[in-house]
Length: 225
Image 1 (cartoon, rainbow, N blue to C red):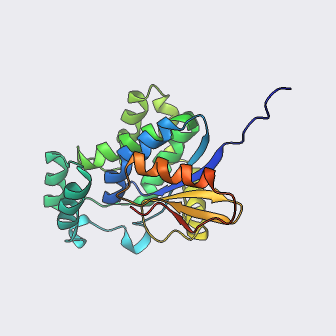
Image 2: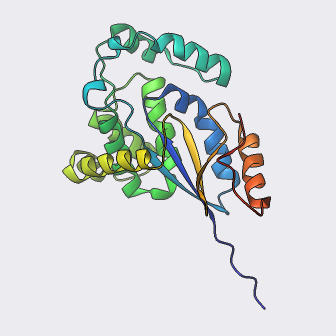
């Protein structure tokens, strides 16, 4: 008798390209997903942190530099000199809807490389200080990933991508996400948060193993980092 295929564990990673804590968490979630690629099914959804009246120049958020220092201290993330100059100028606008549309355009080309696209977008902003509202940034990321840059640019500008971004924002809210980054594991009892923004790949793995070994009710949160 052939073994019964085991269904992959479903997870959703809710993040925002302009979230510094997501940038700090990025290497851990990427490593975790790579280790367990054969047994998890991971979606990446944008949360819409800076949209509408919140999509304003970075000078409106004077706390960013202090927050970045704490992120660097606790996660080891580094922030590039070009990004620091962009912050100092203060005129760049963090528009999460534009960033989400860019990620959707990249996902249509290579859904299996979503975390690579996320990493590239975060490097573009947090290392190079490049606006994720600039279509050329998404073209450059597409070329870096070996994708069709013209198709990505066209999708980025398409109204459907903007509509999809808004739908993702609503879905993230419907999942009960209130902060970023949030990694959710979908259980029969509903979504459970896996780890936290300071969790390492090892800690996320331990939390996943805890879930897989559990046989009764499911906790609301797995792992505590």
